[in-house]
Length: 240
Image 1 (cartoon, rainbow, N blue to C red):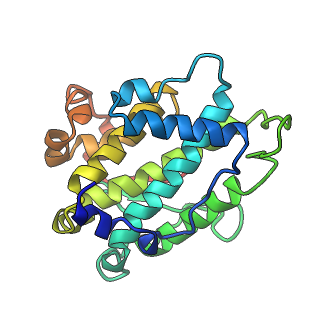
Image 2 (image 1 turned 90 degrees about the vertical axis):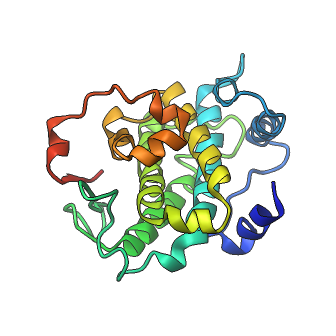
């Protein structure tokens, strides 16, 4: 990592406190194994594949927490430029608006400024990954039957952070000299969620439509022949 990136991506920039794995646990060992593969320069497609003999849920849990930490770091570097004035609605370009919905205050899809949406999103994910009934940390405690469905929802919402940063704040990422790092993080995320079948193809459409990103990210250019649904002819309102 260059000096510029070390200055940009540091713990003081994290949008939320970093979630760590307990040393000595299976998930800690899987995390170290995954990080070692990435640091060794191994192909990202190979790095995200489930290791032989390992539990799929453990592998997914490790990556969900890791992506939560990484994407928090990325958003933390530009959050001062993402305000209610600059981003009055959480969106991914002119055709996509993300509306917030939860089981508490916003029971119906609600349009919100991007910073408020991000706060609610990160709060919600923190609740999920800190819930022992969903992400058990004790050896022998099983994952819930709906674990992968919950992870799909978490990863879908985290992907929207990438969309917003790329389309609305990538100029700041470039100024900070962090373009290559963010691109690598995105490729890692993309390869994992597609390898493990954890994201719907329709969620990828906002970035597929952005020509600049399609050129910058080889993985997106490979999807260039994807047919866009009729919904993208008008602004799409998406909530999950």
